[in-house]
Length: 248
Image 1 (cartoon, rainbow, N blue to C red):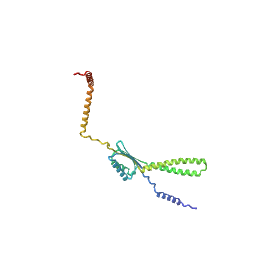
Image 2 (tube, rainbow, N blue to C red):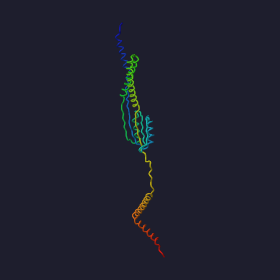
Image 3 (cartoon, helix red, strand yellow):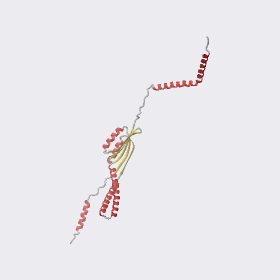
Image 4 (cartoon, helix red, strand yellow):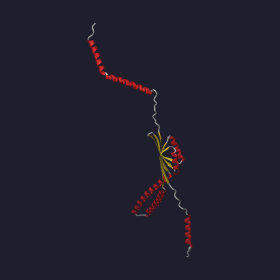
């Protein structure tokens, strides 16, 4: 049987052609996580709320949570907003125009490498789980079955943790998070009462009259011994006259 020497070369050339024709692996798109906090002082709370709703629609964002209060003379609102990463910077800029910025903290982080690592770990754990299932199907020893089942259980726990981590990265990179707080200082609710023009004069006259009455009482208090002696003397004279009537 004669084997042609050109056959191996032809097979090698064919394999090389297939390898060169195979598509290259796509480069992973960057996954950037955005988050921030923005505090605003506004002049009209209701108008600011309406403008925020319009901005959320314009920038394809949505409200996650909201908490509104009236305390310490302020009408306040705290909101958690979910924003598309491509709209994050534009939304923050538009929100800053609604009032006076009291505080602004913005941060970003590239989690592409972390997501790739988590995805690779998930794939590895899933492949290992499939191997354990095959070993369990081929094993008849009770002790070996228990050992493999325990290892499979530990593997499933690790797989669940990796899957949860990957989902968190995916959610954070899909929607940026912005905490927005804005407030309006409420006006004084107690109206100021304007006193009439004659009110100060009336009050002054009242105090003068009261002062005069108290002055009279003070003088009478100083003269009470004389008044007492005069009253006793008048009583004694009257009693003497009654006991010694004048005869005509």
